[in-house]
Image 1 (cartoon, rainbow, N blue to C red):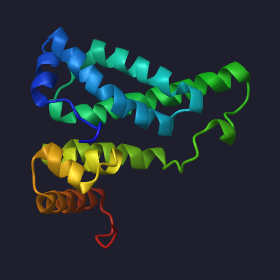
Image 2: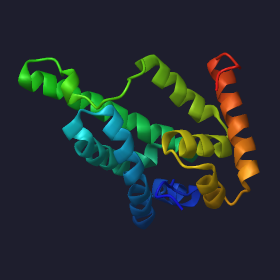
Image 3: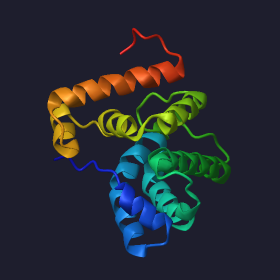
Image 4: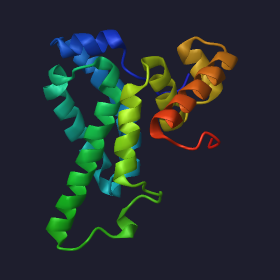
Length: 178
């Protein structure tokens, strides 16, 4: 099984209700996923700081989470905002724009698209959101997904196809796109 994991609904509900042990489990499970995400969105040396600040904010604000199903998208939005805040701080400290050599070597999508994707993830049913996050964000294989979700590989492929189709529909994308 891959190291990618998501917090259980039960732990999220308990953490939201104030259970410190459940909160610790949620934060521990989320940390690895946040680190990978932050490495793509932060200036090279800021990923760990962004994760720490994000986990601190989550620990203080988890009670404000309205729907536990929206936890993953809420969590990744917090990290993205923290990365942006750290980039602005670096620019203010140095008096210079953040240069390309400080940024990770990836293609950044427009912020608006990120907001649209976050909204789509929030509106998807939990089982579709889960499979999209694990496959497309975490990079899990079909076999790893089947093992973690206790499904057959064919069921994973089918669910993934339906999740992507529904996400494309919500985004208004061309249905012929992958």
